[in-house]
Image (cartoon, rainbow, N blue to C red):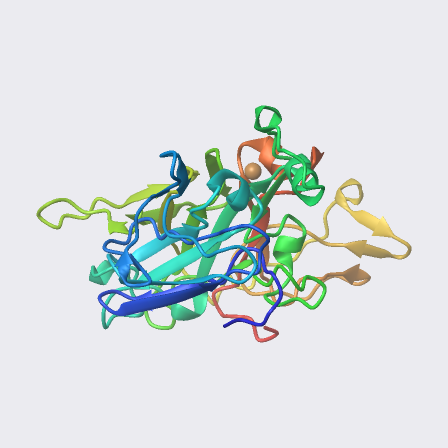
Length: 358
Ligand SMILES: [Cu+2]
């Protein structure tokens, strides 16, 4: 039993396909709650088939057996299914309880192949570059009504905050378990080392899951991603042919998951004769001047960092650069309408030679 305080999202559960899974729900809420695992089959609740619950009048009370208010518990068991990523959430008063944050991600790894997304060998990824992007939204008016124990006016539902892993930009950039975000432990800054046949042949994987109510058209800048898995199923034909696709905007629908591989290829082969390229001072009108210093931000060239001109200040550690990545429904890329927030983060790309500073 977790003794930690509430966290958003719920803990990411990682299991192995074909292995038994047991989740014990201890309810401390003042109302019944439950857990559903869409995409998993033959789920049991306290040993009985998990199935919809009705009151004596025949009205649905919960999608599965629920734990009683305040002190109830239910044990859910199932055998982990097809490899991929899934949403889990409350199955009781789902619209309200999911809005209040009762959801998380379930990652099913292929049996005996923890370094692959699915059973296909071409789904291999770098285990040190694995990311979950659990996307969601918050309408503060709903939260205010729940806090005041007042009825929720769903006809006026209007989400104002949009999150990746329970955080909005700029908090998405903070590290995992940042001390100043005690209830939002998961960061969303993707870190990619450029592809190299010998030193870094495996791509990063980003597992997108939508816990909200509308499409989130997630858009990384600078390069596309290869979608290889959808809703816990490999994108392949009946004969096993590869049906994965490369995309610059990933439309993640409510309840859906997409597993996407991303690597970064230096266009020009490294040539010692021309690397590093000279670092030239921009014209004065393109410089940001503070006091006697200038800030240099120039070409996103994937090369070797050269010495900066005199009096130049840089926060760049080693020649790495950063691409923004965000929902392209731009009202989702705001914090209550204030732009450059919400469902937004950055992807960090290191130079091909690596980054000794990090
Ligand atoms: Cu953009």
